[in-house]
Length: 128
Image (cartoon, rainbow, N blue to C red; front, side):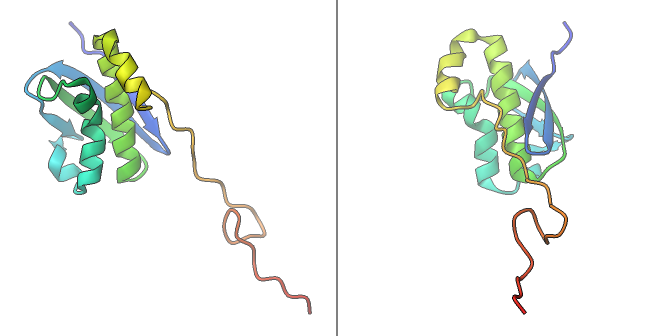
């Protein structure tokens, strides 16, 4: 059976997820999960779908992620894992949906405008 790839996105991060039956090993960009995400908050974010569906240690996760920063990548992985779990078992959907894990967060960085130093910040106004 060919592995199905699930995609999760957040900000500029794109994560491609493959879920397999296994012992709960998470590999991100061919590195150990704990080494890739040094912050515990990001690691907890990635494992949240497994905690809510009580499937910790049942699936191995292979992740290829690029773009964005660590928090955006962690949330992109979280979305991909949630989508993969729902495709495996549709009964997981209500618990993941109530926590908002199946929704793609649309917030992006606002672009910089000309005549301004940043997106909304203005140069100092001088009357004279």
